[in-house]
Length: 189
Image (cartoon, rainbow, N blue to C red):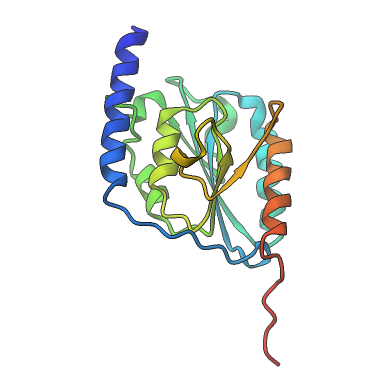
């Protein structure tokens, strides 16, 4: 069964590479203080990670940033805390196609949205989320550095020797985003 799953993912990855070959993208970053929209792609297979994510979303909202979260839960039924939550759209296993690509209007909308920053929290490398991150039209994409940095879709990569939890990872993301071009735009008087 695992072999068949891997073949389907390999075919999905091939289709993704075909789409990516037709896209030219130039990363653009406006500085942390000028960010208005943040998208988060999240592996929701660990429901205990939801609370740190919700706190982060609340903190960013208080700073005037709109946060949109697209999660992927590999089960058929979502945990109760994911249902009727306005900050998160969570795909379940039944909402991906044969090749593990997202097959919902919400996922398509997320991919097409011109976000200022996309943060990838896909520590277990779920292909469904890799697909969304790779095709996202976000101006800047942030994620964990992998074995082959040249093959990742990320513009900013966070390197972690030890496994980070969601909370520590998000702290690191904000820390580095604040360092990059961190001067706020001053309005002319």
